[in-house]
Length: 145
Image (cartoon, rainbow, N blue to C red; front, side, top):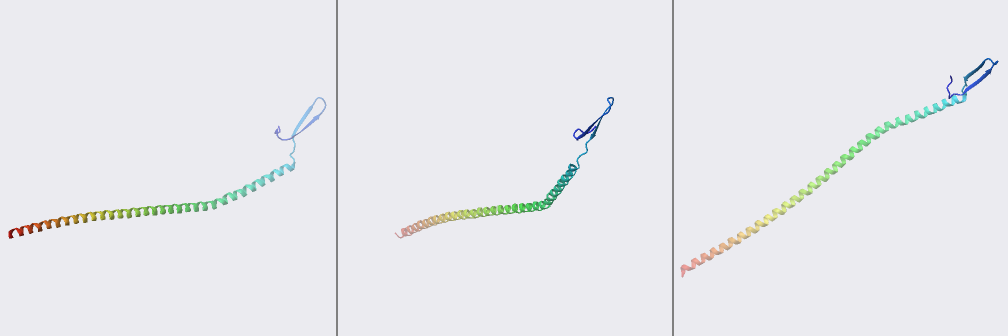
């Protein structure tokens, strides 16, 4: 039996009343529609090939671009690390300078305290010497009396 979607040609042949015969044949497809299908298929194949060339042609450049992006990212990361290290060094230098300044102030304060104590001791010694001189003078005058 013929495919239901294909056009069919039906011929009924009538013979004397005793025999009736029916023939069903598939209708031949028109020649114009068959070749246009091939043209459409060829056009689609050409478009697919052109698309494949562009797709795979871009892949090589994409790999180069991807490697360049990786290298650029690596360089930027190294630059950021260098900036961070420089900032850390600057902070450490500032901390060291502040520490040296604090140590200088502490040393100056201790020196001032020591000088004050020395001056006080010198005054005490001078007072003791004055007292000793007075005692000596008093003792020396008394025997003459």
